[in-house]
Image (cartoon, rainbow, N blue to C red):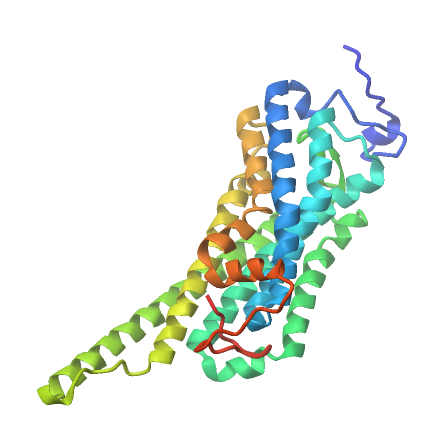
Length: 358
């Protein structure tokens, strides 16, 4: 059966050229119902509408909020930049791919599309990993925190995240370790094996599996330390209650400022944990299929899996608003003409401070 796609010898040899418009024919999306693809387009447009302004506002608001200037905020801004790039660059091309049931933007963008997509995923997860390690050091090894999270070490960490995430895929971009190109089996541009060699398994282990394992271990350790600290505090308080005479008056907390700071840090940890679990929930289904299974799954299952991935780039600002009063205030202050007023009794950290106001 004829179609309006022109397949040339270069494509069959594994090379998509700029003279090869891939619009119909030979693509997985050809057999998908139009209603399903239109639903995917609607979701992608919605994610762009939420994700671009949401992540941009997050970057601006947290940059402006000086009392939130700390290592955690720096990594959250880094995460927002990666999500903004995904929403602004990748998602519009996804919309076009669904509408045309194939790729129509030439070879260069067909290579850059998966390059930025996979790299941004790595930047996002490594940013969450960096936040988790930051919280772990803050709680478990406070004596090392000031040295580990100075300005230059923090800048070096962020630079390393980007260099590693993008640098790992440079061999694939050059066609040395797999290649980027149009894959009819997925109906879009992706990583294609060359001589049965592909970086997908490596990326799954190094850029997904290992970070997730480290994050889980850190959080288990964090919550164990928090629980032990709370038990010790209650035990000390009970001992003071038993040894204090009745006429000595009410017993005050051992350290109100410390208790308040620990409660604030715990709320921050819970927020980052929600971000991590939402990331895993969005990426794990399709990631497992890509590495271990066949991608020619049921249309609804396949599209829903990709919708989850696309949604991950726009939900973090929503999490910030729902779970952090300080972040909500930062968003609000962004639209005021005057600088946020310092409230009485609120301790403001310097840019090198490790405490986070939640």
